[in-house]
Length: 169
Image 1 (cartoon, helix red, strand yellow):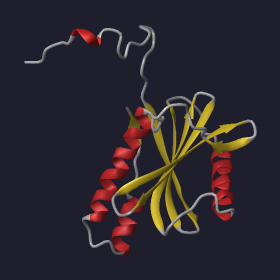
Image 2 (cartoon, helix red, strand yellow; image 1 turned 30 degrees about the vertical axis):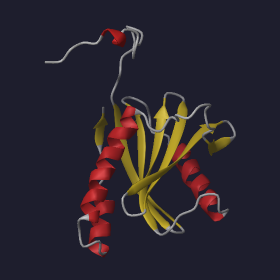
Image 3 (tube, one colour; image 1 turned 180 degrees about the horizontal axis):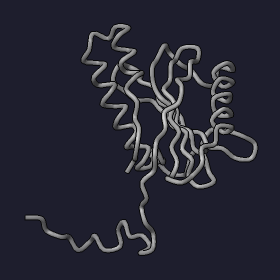
């Protein structure tokens, strides 16, 4: 039997008119960078148009960051989530490192282009929205299958071919 604790009042309270809406994920062509092959995903709300120019800008930005040595890869596989949230864009670059760890870099887009997401005060940091976590859960399951496989070229290709599609909730 679950007991409702009195100290829960006021926790996780959101305005009554706020509604959590699902988003959709759209796979793109993988991004090949020195030291990495990254699956590509665009995330946006239902009804928002695709923005191929922003995806191209994001890909170019990551190529430039890698070429300049600001984005380090160690012969890794991973994925990119380019998340359109209304008029804002966030880009998560995730790689599988040290066998079973996901390492992530976070960028946002402003009028000047893509920039590293600035650290917030305090110890806790934003990491992923609930929709991004849904996509990451798909990728985590795929990476777990890879780790339990022969980890040969066919297994790597199977990981790259296993794409998250549809609705994110």
